[in-house]
Image 1 (cartoon, rainbow, N blue to C red):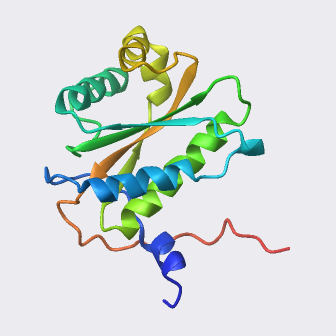
Image 2: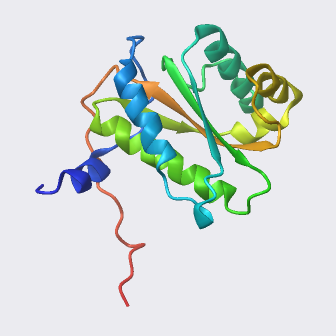
Length: 173
């Protein structure tokens, strides 16, 4: 492929098995910056991005997410880093804004040789008292809703083959 941006989009895949290797801080910084530069409705920049590297908090978030999944398994697949995206619940484009931030970070991570998987249940997590208590502990407004989260790290098996995508949803009129 000639265009690296398009190649990055076409080859990114969700990964569900991570090495425990530490991720370089300069790469984390670039990924978070990419999320903060995502488009947002009327330029309101409603998303709040929280990067969790601390193992204690990582395990708390994993357990909280697993609770809403009714599972004892790690919903973040052993990834050493969890990135949470929340947004101001009073801004009407909060879901769209947060989704753009998540996508930007997934593409940035892939371009840096890292892997991600979008994990759901952020809304349930931060609607719960446990989630609100964590926000308070972190000094973050409770006026936010959870949009999504990312498992981030180096893939255990980096030989994923890009599956062909269906093109029947594309209509040119």
